[in-house]
Image (cartoon, rainbow, N blue to C red; front, side, top):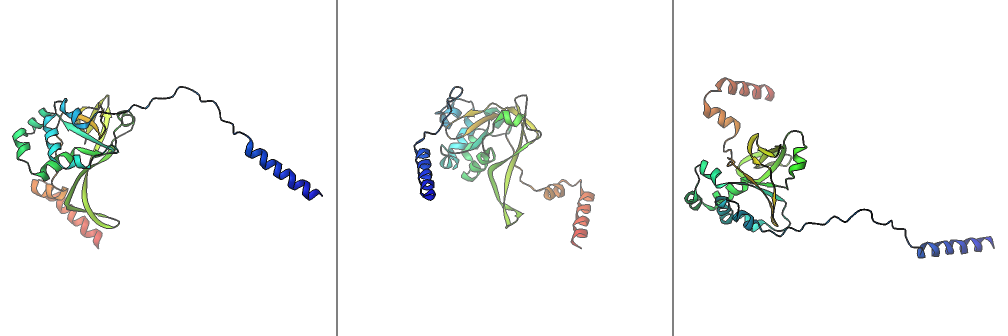
Length: 220
């Protein structure tokens, strides 16, 4: 008899728990509106005074890879920055598709750049670019892979430093396809590794011999 009473109590407990409404606390505070970004990347560049970068971007293959889910940032040099580097409209028109891609990819970093968070970060943050040198191989756990360029970015007092050089303000312009930060200098892509640079410079022969001896001693 006690067993049946116990079963009945268990059934009643289950039924009461299934029918009881769950407690939900009242929402606190106001709902934060989500800002929808409708501006197109090309529209942003068109009114910015960076027509040379826009021209290179339109001729490159980068636009084909972009979509509304892209998490990338363009460092966009102004036209004056291009001209100071000796690049004008004619130079852009005479470039090959590979040169257009390399130029744009070197100014494109993966991820969105939040100026407030970066300014609160001590030191630099490393941001991989879309630019890859397939001729230069680097070692990894799986063997070797093509070298991928990176930029080291920091912000202080609204000034952005890229690879330890002042490059403009850190104002971020958001578009549907990507973020844009305008800079006042052209980022020059290194084309030599350290040893090649030291050998060609001619002033570091003693240092190079020390490196050779160090490598030899380690290999013993």
